[in-house]
Image (tube, rainbow, N blue to C red; front, side):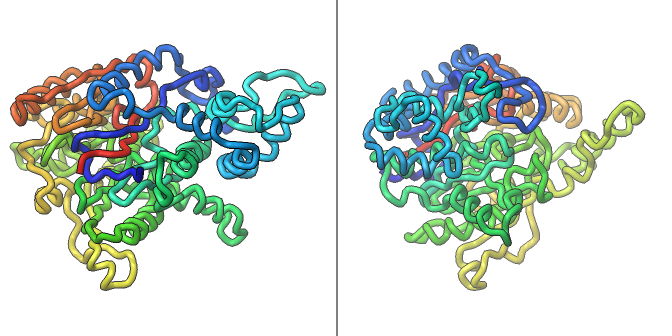
Length: 485
């Protein structure tokens, strides 16, 4: 099987998820660069309750056999591998730490070929060693860090019409994550050879081993939540405005690398256009899928005012609503008590939502990855022009602007619910959507709008009591492998 999807809403056939486990026990709730430190400690039993709602919805939609678990696929790889194969897979997965891990196992009396596959997978995800015990008067080095964010399986890879791209993470703590799904696509017999068409893990390793390129990792950031498949012909990729910012999860350099790889891998020449969508460099807007998602044909859920719509009924446009609102907030703060560098500014939204178009024919004509020489337009306007969206079929985060006395009141509510990932929904089939339960105004509007477009529409509200303690929603928790053509 070669993973392939040509839209974000067509009928789902297979999907990859990761049920959170004991990796969440291994965290010290301090800010720092140590592998055990993390600012968002979560109770994994409660996380599992939340995740169970999502998994139950997916199993009802496509059957339990088609909802694949990261841990299960990794276990199957090692169960079917002898010593040389296990050694090779671990060398490829752990890179420079593989020999240290294998030597440590042997020192404890474990032979790699007889070490249980389940324990290898636990070590890869929960970390190794998992217990802090003294050895010759010293605490151990963490050979394999716990991968607590593996639950956000969308971030570390993305399925496209051309196959799978393995990504490169912005956070240093998360950079080992893509190696897990990379090993699944490379070594599990379920997947065809050539499933991966762009391997950013391999690309980054080459950079790190080259003295002339060392240190350029942050120049090539690419995360799966910024990649949205609009159709067989069009893909949207969210890109931050500024380079070398933590909140900028995808950079222009990585975007251009991906564009070239996509057009090269598309041997049937069906992919026509790729949109580069400017996403504000703000924590609440970390990926394009946090503010925009497709829910059906020409239908979407969207954060208002960021993409030039909705147009307010006054002498203002959508961008000015954002800018006036931000200026008002900053102007009414006690500057002696507030660090304004941490508050959004007008500049954050000057280019937000603007789109550059990268066309296959134009790139072939120019001989390099280069945008069409046309003025940037707002993302929604570009989708309407290309026949991919109907503005009358858009659900706005926070509900309809008609329900508010002013666009500023609408924006205030939308910012609150968007912070709770109201727009980060997952679509299993046209108008069959799962969303967080904690955004009542958006959910009510989404349910009403979907039923008007399709009487058979269904909105599933999953629990998000613990899972929402980090930025991510149902779209981030899922990695589709196959949808109907």
